[in-house]
Length: 96
Image (cartoon, rainbow, N blue to C red):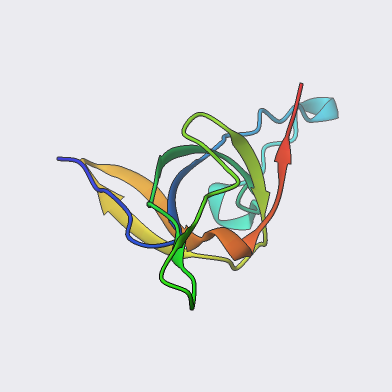
């Protein structure tokens, strides 16, 4: 199944951050913070401006982005946890 976001929405897969703990300390999943970095899987066509034109999206599929801790709506699609959020909720795009 696929999902195409509407307007200025984006579909994001959280990036799992590898953690190394000195001394072999294991932190349970419930105590870990969720990553605030992810990869864009799909983008909407853009927000409709007052003059009837579409505002082009500043991000594209495959971009790595940062977002707020509580931003977006969590959904489950094909047994995978994903986020849907507005482009304005994104903090920035990571460039290598």
